[in-house]
Image (cartoon, rainbow, N blue to C red; front, side):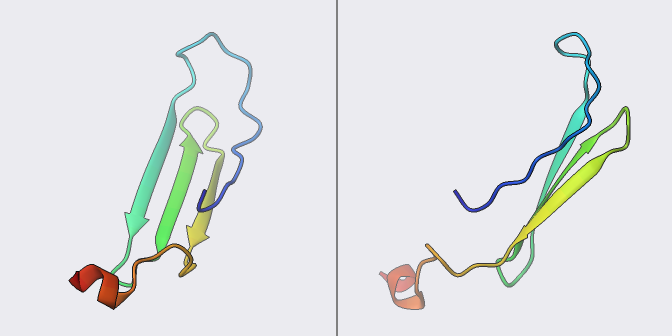
Length: 63
């Protein structure tokens, strides 16, 4: 698990009705930004993951 966040205040609705858009962006430095937005309420949350944990070293990549 790289990270976790919650998207809250989604109103009750029948299954399949809420529309949640999730976007993943990775920049040239390997920083990951994940955004989730409830299209009905416009409520959104995001997380930025820039940890070097569990990344391959340049030596491992060359192998």
